[in-house]
Length: 184
Image 1 (cartoon, rainbow, N blue to C red):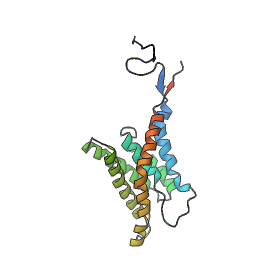
Image 2 (image 1 turned 120 degrees about the vertical axis):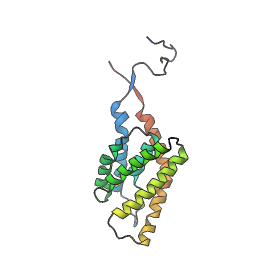
Image 3 (image 1 turned 90 degrees about the vertical axis):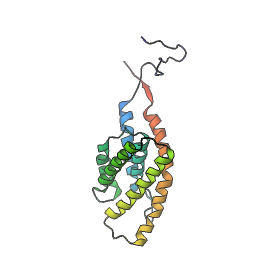
Image 4 (image 1 turned 60 degrees about the horizontal axis):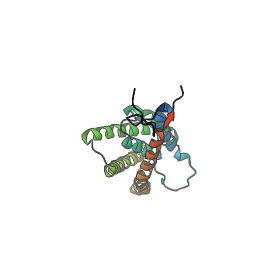
């Protein structure tokens, strides 16, 4: 029997009595938020050029960089598939790029196990540049110098939005780990 502090009703390890995480919230929230962000191409934004960043991909990067062990390596397949269904890219583009991104981050973290905010932002920026360039190449459009310069605002907006999305993911992670009273 563990000794309890009567003022805070916590055991010696800091957990509250009869409290646990909701499994659906703990494991499902990252998947749900990435899929919800993949639906952003359906927003009524009128623009002559691609301006809206690939928010599903940015959310995947933020979750993977914030919580390395949360998403398995095979998560790129179903999340990329869902992104392909709603992004307008050719089928398989999101599957390939999401999966390659998860593999690349896994290899990078094995090589550089230390991380900080600036390294995560640099990693996300490089991954976003590669993703947007490869998505443009795989789109099937004939790429000219003018078309390549048109995607620069989308790339810059994606890089600038990453810290904001990473902060939102950190807040969602606190919600994900919220403890609830266990009945029974």
